[in-house]
Length: 94
Image (cartoon, rainbow, N blue to C red; front, side, top):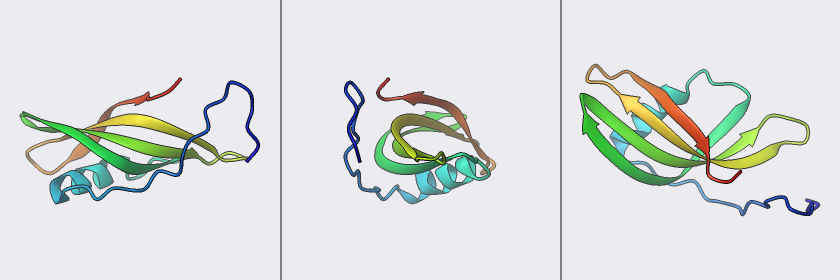
């Protein structure tokens, strides 16, 4: 990959193993998303609410030509009925 002046060059991050309830919620939340692949690399935190919020750092790859890599913080909410959705996505680096 050619480096461009001022552009972040992302390392080869390894996927992490999420705890089972987090993995289930994450899978449900990203199901059907198109255009960007999300790979969890760090499980950061959880928050007990009326369900759970999970904070996960993901390596992203946009399906562009050429593919564009990134790193994002993804917040997932899992309700008490087993449903899950993304509540926030933001860049780690700008």
